[in-house]
Length: 195
Image (tube, rainbow, N blue to C red; front, side, top):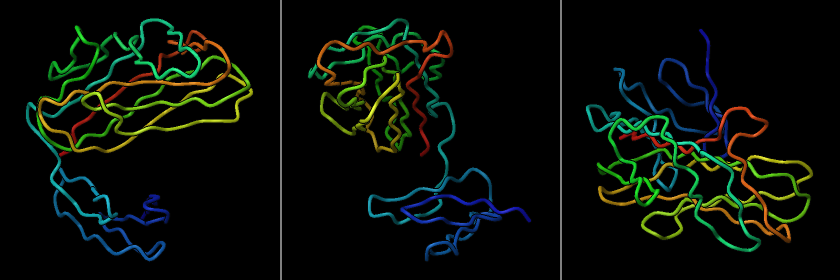
């Protein structure tokens, strides 16, 4: 029987028939016995199976950039070129304010990526802001070519909260975020409700 390994809290965990355990002293999680469950964890790293969100309020959202955006040196700037909807099954995009608006309280997976133009100096940061305040960030350094910056996080949100993506860099001058690197696929900001 094939086994899947996942990297969880700094250790590899084997998963087979819905049972996790064995790698790195991880406890067995048992089998949820039915489909429709997802593996979840608390901020303390305690894992459990929880019922996956279902029904008309299951968020499946993605938006991409329509054009390049210039970010000034040492300036935290909202990425306002995320404005071309790929999918929005719950109509949660607030086009007037260029932000995502949570319709239903729950736990969400947020994944956002931007592609910075080439510049060899400085750092690049991508931020998730919730209700105008920093919620999560990811910093990248050591560039010699154009590069992608990505952030992925699970976050509990309450109906009515809004989310935005920000960026910052310190290359010594202006630097562009490229909407479609090499003319290829645009980087996206994606959100899924998982419970």
